[in-house]
Amino acid sequence: MSFLDRIAECNAHDLAHFRPFVVGGTKVGWVTPARAARLARFGAVFDVRDDAVELDPGLATFDSRSAALARVVAELAAERAITGVRDEFYPVTTAWEAPPLAKIERAAVPHFGLRAWGIHMTGFVRGPGGIAIWVPRRARDRPTYPGELDNTVAGGQAFGLGFVENLVKECAEEASIPEALARRAVAVGCISYCVETADGLKPDMQICFDLELPPDFTPASEDGEHESFELWPAAKAMERVATTRDFKFNCNLVLIDFFVRHGLISPDEPGYAEICRGLRR
Amino acid sequence: MSFLDRIAECNAHDLAHFRPFVVGGTKVGWVTPARAARLARFGAVFDVRDDAVELDPGLATFDSRSAALARVVAELAAERAITGVRDEFYPVTTAWEAPPLAKIERAAVPHFGLRAWGIHMTGFVRGPGGIAIWVPRRARDRPTYPGELDNTVAGGQAFGLGFVENLVKECAEEASIPEALARRAVAVGCISYCVETADGLKPDMQICFDLELPPDFTPASEDGEHESFELWPAAKAMERVATTRDFKFNCNLVLIDFFVRHGLISPDEPGYAEICRGLRR
Image 1 (cartoon, rainbow over the protein chains, first blue to last red):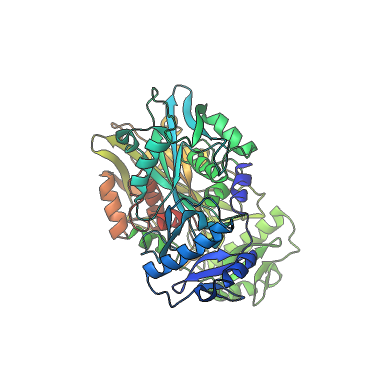
Image 2 (image 1 turned 90 degrees about the vertical axis):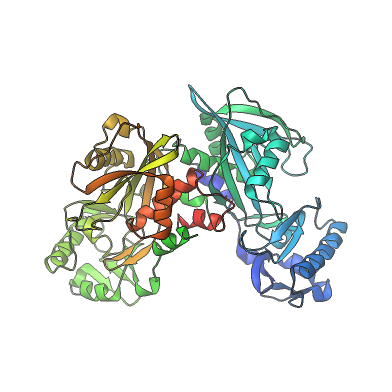
């Protein structure tokens, strides 16, 4: 059952390659030794030790920590150690509902191995042949994951926005789904994973939504993030997820969770329980 | 959010109270020191050490291990150290799809801290007021969990049966659901937990099913396991799960998973991600 391969790919990491990143006394992320050495050159902003990298404990407030991190990120971006800065901020925290310790530029989140949150929605249609799923392809000119297949709607979760409000916003921008229709989306759980990438560690959590779309509705990109949308029979999506890496890595988990919840994988298939548990690490 | 209390109760255990139980070179369970001391009196059947209890490695086959365990269980049952023997066998294994190392009487499974599998189904109706759930109450004369609220259909997974076949069988026995209707049930994932009980450790895995029932169908017990069935608005079930221990302990997790998958809990509620992850340990 190669769904387990996709799950394993999203969880390929070795924490021995990283040191904990501590903010306000809490371990919130993971930094490589090479990045830690670079951070040491910011003087008092970081206490860089062999066992951890700690943001100056003297920075005791959300605002002072956020300002210090912003100065660091600006300098790292100027050196191209961080790319893709877009002035969108993520919270620095271990639990979404906890008061964040700081905010940080989205593009810097993996650099510090911070947890990112996001929303991923599967738009689908029920027909006589069963369930069909709307599958977009990311535009070739995108800086991240160009040309890869994607979930119908997906987006990072910026600081200060609710998950449902973010979904409604992304539905409009990414798929031209009107608000009244987007609000019919059903939150169905979450997937989580932890993967080591060239940008750093990504111990992320994605809130999943299902939206049954009317048969006569065709999604279309408003913001140019996707070049096309195709309606695929569920069996085609299952085969593609199981046998290829055509989908953006974490979209595979969202689709596998969809397949599980809609009874498209038999519990008598070998590996069923391992798949269910593997979707949330 | 007290759904997290129910999840914590299903995961209350301390492995420091147990020693690994090893069969065929594989850690398959957990035994208390008191039970280990009793097992030492079976002579060569067990190698009882401070760090583990091992079934005699000389027992190299499924049949020889199963026969040795059956003799032990019979003696422990005669001493009332194991109660409720019903000549129903569970596999001794760590993964359902792996060839089992042995089989063992169901009533002895927690004694050795072996993983048990089962199936739990939520029968529900969609009406103008939203989703309503069929909730049975266990008969007061049952040996296990008398008088507690239960999932619509639930049963342990005996050796050699498929999950779907078991569900169909239990649907008939526990709720008088005809086979054609039972086969419409949708497998929707699994929940797992690990709880320490007076009978031993229960590191169990339950396969979950949803079945949308016709509005004119009323479940009824065939086998006397339940004294009554009531159709509850989902909100009533949510309130009862969140604020009481009226449901059999693991049924709470199956219902919380149902609430999550059907969008009955907002992702903007504090603890949402922790709930989703807590359902599979």
